[in-house]
Image 1 (cartoon, protein in one colour):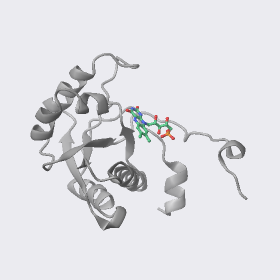
Image 2: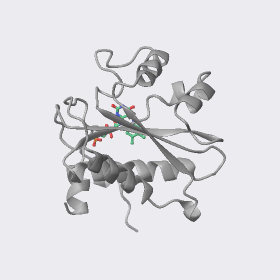
Image 3: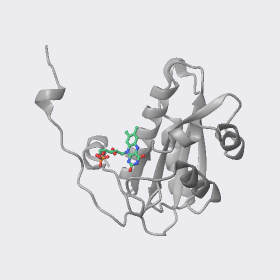
Image 4: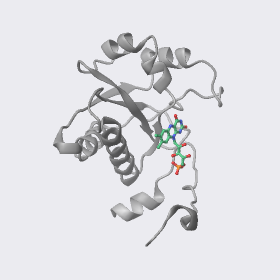
Amino acid sequence: MDVMKAIAARSSTRGYTAEKLTKEELDALLTAGLQAPTATNRQELHFTVLDGRDPLLFDIQEVMGGRARPEKNFWYDAPTVILISGEADFRWTAVDAGIAVENIALAAESLGLGNVILGCLKAAMDGENRERYAKALRFPEGYTFQIAIAVGHKAAEKEPHGFDREKQVTIL
Ligand SMILES: Cc1cc2nc3c(=O)[nH]c(=O)nc-3n(C[C@H](O)[C@H](O)[C@H](O)COP(=O)(O)O)c2cc1C
């Protein structure tokens, strides 16, 4: 799929079928993340793949407590969740993680897979359980959680968001 079409078509998917990703699909998504640019080509990001039934996700959900949509878990029952961690003390880590997660989102869109970027677990990941999660998720030493993305086959549809070009763009 043309990259412009993928950008225009992408939207957040908040409901998934139980169908697993194939190994090829998962490899393609991870490659898209690894191919993202990083400041000074530092490549300070790490990608941790979790099955949607992994007890760690339910553990994080528990620590997160109440949510706006209590009827759904934070990964919307997606079969795969990718957590991106990165060097805590590199100034561009958060930006690089954002670029990598969007690369994955666009790759997923181009493969016909639903996806949603997940930031809502950040407080739980940065809280008193930080060390425990970093160990269980095998983050490299000195890495902290940055962002996550859920991926799977769509069981829910949503139109891409609208925007206000007049308000958000200035061309001098
Ligand atoms: C950094 C970031 C964090 C996000 N965190 C969540 C989240 O935790 N849960 C969720 O359902 N959506 C999350 N989203 C998805 C946004 O809500 C969504 O992108 C936005 O509403 C626009 O809708 P669209 O993606 O369908 O265009 C996040 C998006 C970004 C960029």
